[in-house]
Image 1 (cartoon, rainbow, N blue to C red):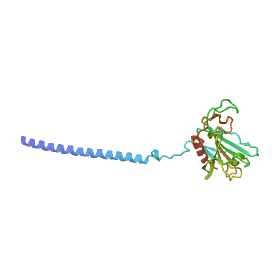
Image 2: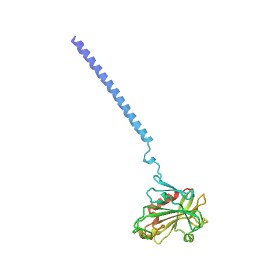
Image 3: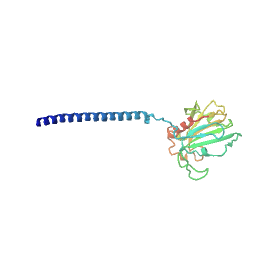
Image 4: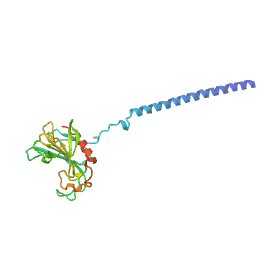
Length: 243
């Protein structure tokens, strides 16, 4: 009777070990399968989710769009942090001295500050001006730029066509000015014409754009005009022009 009990205890022990082994194997298999599934899901999500290198590098992200109020069909984009009061102006375009309608748009890289109020004030901070002026008459010209040649041309695409943005030398490097340089245009060498027949003149300069003060506000008059970061922004603005 005792030997049978010992024998029965041995069988029970073997069965217990076998059951525990099976349970352990099943548990290991389930855990391993779940881990592989989690890794696979994470990898799939990583592949489907756009990483930094997959994002669109849009240079105009966050910019605003201006549409002409003179009816020329002109539009362009500009940085939201540039000073551009004309964008919200409700005043009508004025008549120029040739009897045509005219609208002058002046964008500035920062809001200007002056030593005193009024037209006699001298600027106390440095900023770049970009003038985009529209006319119904094509007779307005700058004789200076018709007789001068740019020291450098920057080819830009406007409305699908390549134009030259000419750098004309000033009294110092930072007093240089950029103009659309179009020698074959009937109205002068820094004009383009929209599909509606309006003439557009474009100019960029530091502290020298429709204001008094000259170069008083330029902190680095001998710096390279074309290496200033604002000039790169101007090129983007001009390249966004549509008509």
